[in-house]
Length: 206
Length: 226
Image (tube, rainbow over all chains, first blue to last red; front, side, top):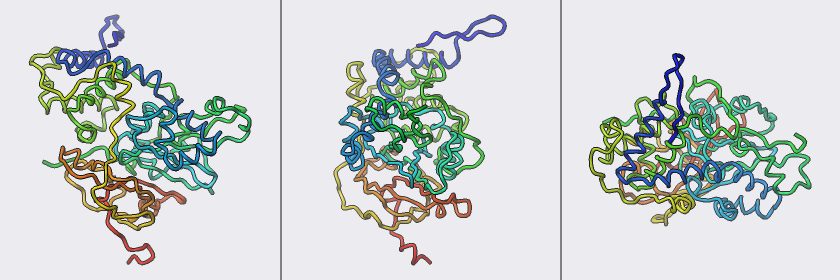
């Protein structure tokens, strides 16, 4: 538990109210034997250091580099992603959706904050917040503009609202000028937002 | 008692622009990772399921005011109180005041990696034949059920096309009520933006949802609609 202090203007210091509340909760649950404090530390460490968007970037890079893998990803994303070691909580049933010049994909959960944790980690604040959840299904081009993205008028938009336990991963288009890059270099071009559909991959020159 | 969700936000006006944030911004306060871990660890006790958890969150009266982890904490406290696991008086005291109630299991540190890797798959064996196939025209149910449901308001009473047959899945509506119910076939259903948003529809937009079989009825082909 954090012992961060907040200092008032008058020099007094006090623990933040939320820090105190969560610490009390942790104490009570530990005393009752419902939780193992070491498991909490393990959970936090896992999502800080092991499960995040670099996992998804490796999936995308493999799909860019290996057409057979891309085909597998299209047919059975859960198995293809699990083959790279990413599976489980909030990614039990995966579908990969591929961007093309004709179609751009965007993923949202209007009802809560469903998100493919094994490949993207914890969802960013905006993904869980009302503006994105409200507008993505009605005004996706406006949402993309908030992210500085303008699609050609000829590109259609497909929004995937994650209303059940199926989770969606966007496979962005491979950037121009990336021929000859190995998978690690390709993965470096893949941003979290490009796998949600609110961004595009980096250009190799950038 | 009336069931009221505050979470059905799709299409709702007036929320302003999206505020992007950098990829590394995981936490916004020191207590947030602890709120996450406590919620996951208590979920792992098996005292409730994910749909009961979603129902507890979406019905919090101050839903619109709470940020994500505050919402999680409010729902967690409610779920624990309802089951007699932890009382508000104990949280206020910061210590257990009563002996624990039994929980199905406790997540040990050594089991965290395996538990996360396994997750909680919701696909089940089929107990019925699928009613719909890819390409079928369907219309979504119009009524608003008095319990947790996963058919968003903007997609109620709308005509769409079945694009995917995901397989039989645990039925969220029943699961949220703690009811034993057979799994239902789950479908990917796509809607044209004009069907959802009328004159305000963005051109070239389609929206897909995942819908359980009982959310859907057969619809006449669009060309034959009255």
